[in-house]
Length: 347
Image 1 (cartoon, rainbow, N blue to C red):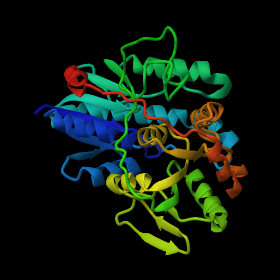
Image 2 (cartoon, one colour):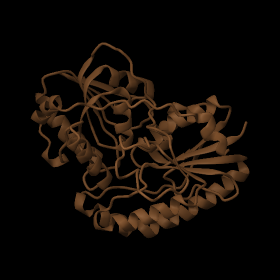
Image 3 (cartoon, helix red, strand yellow):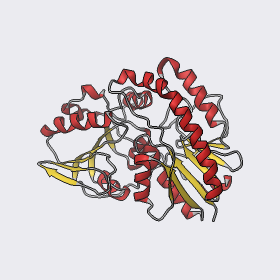
């Protein structure tokens, strides 16, 4: 079997979780996936696929500033270190290809995981990278990276009715883009309701912790049963029950799939992978974008304007705002059958 290196970025859990259906498809099509990442993303995939080889890559060490408006400045300040990490990543990848007999690469937003001697695909929903007044520059930089790969796989619909909007659709920019349709590790199930509200947290610190503290305080007065998943990937799962709130440090895919299907409403970040999951499960949600992250702010605004899901800034959230959800349609599953066999012809 050909061995395919699957390398998602460790920035929140979204890049790792949307790699899960790709890894399962590789196995189903007689390839042997080799997982490569770092931090929480690597921990999560090792729990999901204990039978697969998992390798550690250099960490980008992406963290948020405590103040939302400082995030872009922090990224600019950290860029020399980031470029050094990408160069180290390229050297590690070159070494792994030889030592692990790798025949192909699927990189989800890891810039240095590529090699000109073997076929490689870059997975991203951001052909346009929003960064305020410097969007043109960040987008050009990202497109330059994308062009170094043989193919660019965009997890969204090609048509006007899509999930990523301006992020994943640029007029006149073709490159070697293949639209995969939305990727989700979940399936919709007809289960009895267990929770009135499911809270799903993820994303880099310290903003994840800031939101956790705020929500746990606000939700004390919520009239209904709550399941609260913190998104902390630890060695053992911990569950606590205090009054109407059941808290978990993390859930594996099957457990989270069940909780999502058993919940009436969702409260979470507006990360793109979460959006794809809610569309697959046709859920109603309230979205709180990570402060300073232009992409999540854009997606939250897009779905609010389309009357799909309400949203607000993290600092402004109040428990009464959840009542707004009933005025929105919720997410819709636009059916799309991805031919993985054809997609994997690259290898």
